[in-house]
Length: 276
Length: 311
Ligand SMILES: Nc1ncnc2c1ncn2[C@@H]1O[C@H](COP(=O)(O)OP(=O)(O)OP(=O)(O)O)[C@@H](O)[C@H]1O
Ligand SMILES: [Mg+2]
Image 1 (tube, chains in turn purple, green):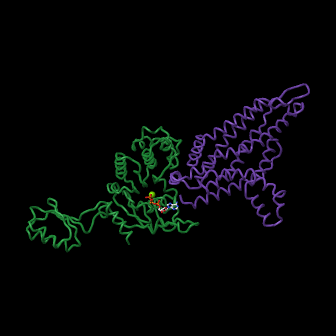
Image 2 (tube, chains in turn green, blue):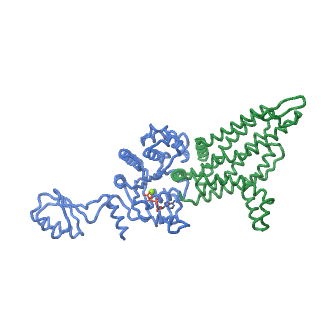
Image 3 (cartoon, protein in one colour):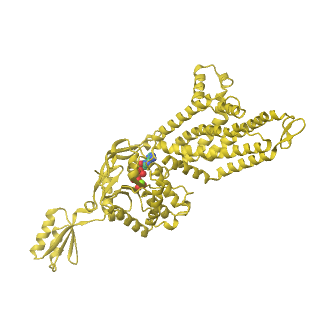
């Protein structure tokens, strides 16, 4: 009950901010853009898929159009993924430091609310907001494709949940940095760096980072980090598999769930030791 | 069972970078507050008043000692259902209205929505905020925030209320209103723990007060006990003093002053008092009363702090 109150309060907090509306506005534009630009033209030789009026494929038999659309959607999802995640972090990161601010934290923690409950409520609130945003965004694009090409890829729609899960994993990094530094800038920068560089470097550590040194310790540390931190790159590959209706690798999700939970527990531990 | 009790409570805020900046905010602080009392904690800036409240509410982890509220040893999350708190510099989410603030924090207090909803209007009315209930908090003035804060602290109908500078920023009429509210809450059997700088105000409503300085408890007692002095007496008499009385008394008694039918005297000890009485009686003067004189709480506070600084 208290947790629900916190989640709803976080919802309201974020929907009172302009950044979230900018995100929703951009989503709407892209959705409408998809609706306007994607089209399927039925000719005698087959179906020609077009984007912005230009054909993106040779004439294709009707049975194979589906695969083509899946491919387009996968490309779109990959392209939009970073945008959604980064903008999402930008729009939501403030909920942690704002609730730990002097004068505000006093109000929350003087209630019959454990410190971890406050963090969990804020965490789930931010994730719930992003679930709504992503469902709106991906759902809209899904609808656009469906209307224009008559391909209703349910896995593309369901990938909203996958993306939200991935956002939740990234948010665990926002959380821990937010608890430690009690401001919004460091979590935003930190999770951007993680998403753009660190995660990819760790994912491909064997090809790049291992070249710098053969030291066992060095490689051990990199391996350790790879297994401790949520493997976003791995999940991205699975995301593509999902949209393409291929069998999906689920191990990165289990790893990310464990990793994010551990980061959450560690954040709660740090939080418990703090004086406000 | 006492409402609040602490035993050798100590808090050191450590600064790991610069050890010199480590502060002992509370030093072996032992206190007991009975249920149904208004208790005032006084002390100069930085004395540790807020730290004490924050430890009781679980905002600050004590370095040593123990404390309990309503018989429950702290830290304890559940007991906070029976506590109300008005923090020193509280900030409510600016995008909420006064009413929404009440609903949010009522919900977090573990009350159900219907209960909170039904209590909100009367509480906002109690603090004189009913006409601002639908206004966004970011537009509130300081005094309005303070009033909302007080209403918010009462949302869960608490048994123990902690108020950190409750009248801060409130106008004189509002302060009187707040004092009246506190008296009323006390008559309902609630315990009120008050931090304040405004001694004249504490004096008016507190049953007991404690004086804290640099984390140490200097004195605790009723306002009467704290303001009474051992050296200042007043003696009432009838008739008129003889001509030579002033001269005679000045020779033996240190300082005194006659104002109508009352002699105010600053005496060294009881023997001087008796000497003065003998003298009056010798002149056949009838004494109507003898009383120890009180200072204001402010004077006694300042004297106490000065003495502490000197020692
Ligand atoms: N979070 C904190 N970290 C480090 N030091 C702190 C912290 N909070 C308070 N202090 C220090 O502890 C001491 C007591 O502070 P506290 O706020 O309890 O005083 P106070 O009696 O409430 O003062 P005031 O009347 O000004 O409100 C001060 O020296 C203060 O600097
Ligand atoms: Mg204070």
